[in-house]
Every structure is written in C-alpha cells, then in structure tokens.
Image (cartoon, rainbow, N blue to C red; front, side, top):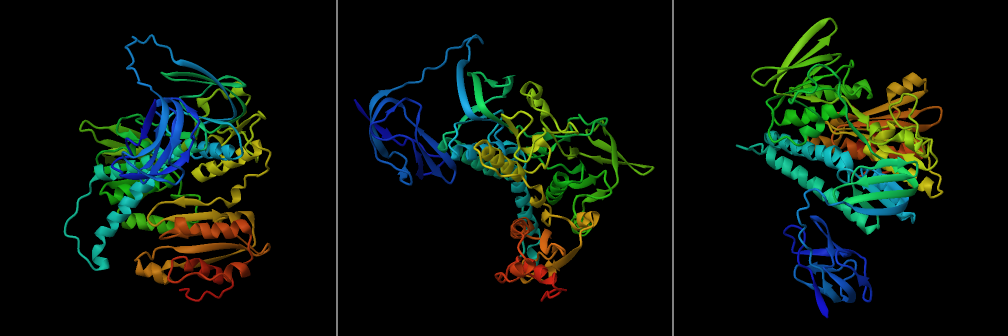
Length: 563
C-alpha cells in the first residue's frame, strides 16, 4: 500500500528549508530510520528519516529544493514501523554487539579529528569516527568558539559604554549574563550541528563513546546501547588535551575553576583571580573585566603573553591596565585558601615578598595537557616524544606504529585548532599516498584580547636570537584613516624582512581586526613573495588593511603616512 512521505517538522520555528544531500531515489528499498535526505536552514541541519520499511515509489525533491512543513515529498510502498517503548530491564539488557572494519578509524571528533575524517572521505576511504563527548571537541564546545562569542558580546558592551564618543547617549542598559550564555550556546549548537551534517553527507560513521585499545589492530567502544568492535587499516589518534593546573594547596576547591567552568557560569563574579597570563588567561581577563568583575592576573613569567615581542605585549598590557585589570608579573602562586564567608584568598610571591588577594572566584589558566592516558598507547606500539609530554610523530603525523597517526594537542607540538585541522589533512593525505609535510614556521595565531593580536612566522625576538640579518617595519593604526574613524587606533602592523634571503619571514598585527588581517601577511610569508611584488599590490581605501601596505613600503623607507 502506498503511503505519503510528509515533512512533519523543521528546525525550531523554521517555516522552510533547503534540501541538502539526497541518499535514495525511486525504486530503492529503504528501512525505517534510514536518512532519505537532509534539510538545511539557518538553525542547522535536520535529517529526514523514513518512518516506513519498503520501496520508494516516488521522491519529488532533489539537492537544492526548498521544502515547507507539511509538504508531500514522495510515495513509498511499505509498512510504518512503530517504535515500541522499552520495558524496564532492571539493568539486565545487553548492548547490541556490532563488528565493523574501517579503512581509516579516527578517535576524537575535534577540529583535528573531524577534518581528518572529511579529508579521508574525500579521498575515497571508508571512515569511522569515535567521539567520547560532542563533535567539534574542545574548540567548538568549550574553547575557541564559545570564548569568541563571549568576547564579541563584551566588545559590543564596550561600544555601548563608549556611545558618547560616537555621538549618542545610552541612558540605561543591563548586562544579562544568562542571555549572553544562551547566545553563546546557540552559536555552538549551530556549528556543531553543521559538523554533524558534514559527517552524514560524507557517509562518515560516527559512534559515541570512549575508544579502548583491545589490541594493536582492534578498538572497542561500549555505551548503554552498543558494544562496538572496530578493526582498521589505519588509525588517527585525535584525543586532544584538557586544562592543566598547578598542584598548589587549594587548587581543588569549588571556587577554583577552569576555562570550561567559566564558559558555563550563570552569574558574574564580583572579583576574580586568574592564575596564568597566557592567551587563555588574558582573553578571559578582558571578558570578565568588561562584565564588571575586578580582575587580578597572576603570571609566573616576567611578562604576560611571553612568546610575543615586547612592543606587542606593551600594547595589550597597557590596554588591560587602563581598563582596570591588575597584572602581577614574575609572581609564583603558592596556595589558595577558602574563608568562612566563601571568599578565596590567592597567595603569591614576587621575589622575597608575599602577597594575598581575596576574590569570589579563582580561575586556573596555566595551559593544557595532552590526554595521553586516554588510550593504551603501549598496547598500540606508539611512543612518546623525548619529553614524554606528547605522542612522537614525523612530518606526516605518523607515529612509531606505521598504521597509526596522531594529530592535534595530543602531539603537544603546537596547541592550536587550525594546526590540528591541518595536521588532520596531512595525515589523511599521507594514508592515501599523497606527500604533504607539516611546516610549523608559518603558522598564524589569533589572540582575542582587546585589542586583538594576529601573528605569523618569526618574531623580532627570535630573529635576534637566531642572528638573522633582518629589517623591521612598523606602521601605527593611529595614522590609518579607517582606524581613526572607528576609534580603534591602538596598536600597529609590524613586518619582519630577511635582508639576506629577500623575503618576509614574519609579521604581527595588534589592533582592530588584527586576527582577520593576519591572513594577508600569512599568505605573503608562506609564498615567499618578493618585497617588490608585495608592495605593488593596491589596497582598498579606506580600510584597516592599508596599514599592511604602509608597513611594506616602510621596509624600503618609503611609507607615505607613517608617523
């Protein structure tokens, strides 16, 4: 008997959506629960699953078709499968046993793992991905993306506070942390659902659970409903990292949190001590400061953001201090004490002097450690590096086991999401016989402080240490037309030029949109373009990017608008 296929629901309150990938056609046999096609909308991707087992007689949609709720999209000669409610089993039911083989098995669905899965699928491999938590990993769910969503919210908040400088007055406004967190969660949900859609549209099998090494050639995954065994031709380990901590007294108090906890807060603390003045610590320092929190940063090293040149750090530190953030440099945190009225006291030492700061919360931001204990690496025949703090890999991300590759934070080479993604592509391509080596000298980084920092290649500090014959050129945003118009005049563009090799070897942009504009410098550094070629390009006016052109001209002492 023929039954109509009806669009019974769409995402959220959407009234229409666009058909993505179509998996079946007229004449195909389908089982209940199989995905007929996907529907994409502004709120993510929805899988349209068959409620019937039978033969499709007609399917009236194709990729790109617009569908609406209640629309008939085809006919099927089949029987509706009604899901039976599960009887209470008193814990005696057994998960379904399943044995599969993957040409490429990936453990970890973060920015390294899911990109490796996509590239492997593009190269024609049968791919299986195992993810313990959520697709997107730390970056999409608990790191890069949610942090940037909050960072943007506080940037808007600062613009509101500075409204009088732009010619309008805001008489009253409230900071609604709950709404900010809801928006952050919506951003995350949209992107994670997009990754889920990419997995489905590329026929990548995804299983939820923790992968366990049974033998050198077998990985098992068990959850409440599934007992899965996977054999593989090649394995890519992409299990990531977790927040680190310093084992001082009080580090395990309830008032002490990590960046992950900070992203789930339901209220704004009156005061906070952040232990660690690196990228994570300083990004959160600016976020909570904008929300009205009194922030103290305790940094062990002589300077915050220690990998950057001093002139760049000076801009960020001065901006932080102007906003009221207290920075304690060369400070060694020694203990954290909880008081009777639920405050916490952070004790730290600078030289021979001991200091104490009381706050409502303490945040540990002292870096991340690879999850080396999440898999039995010894059973896999996979060795660690000389420092025993990351998996040892070659330029193609292959481990000491020829069948096993490792990518991302677990290698502890460079803990950046985009590095993990590129490593994932390198590993996938090497498995398929392509030769594409990793090059870490030209990796850009993005720091979302206020102002932002984008960096690529060799710093001036490193150029001096290596004895490179170089020239540096700097152009300040205070002399850039659009930056002045936007009231974003902090910072500069600085380029590092190798005089012997006659190529750009590095650059940094500290200022408005610096994390976006660094892509232009990255391309020049990566391609090794000559100064003449780079400087002859016309830049649109008025744009902040003109500062890059001026810095290029400055390498030949012919900057037109330099201060």
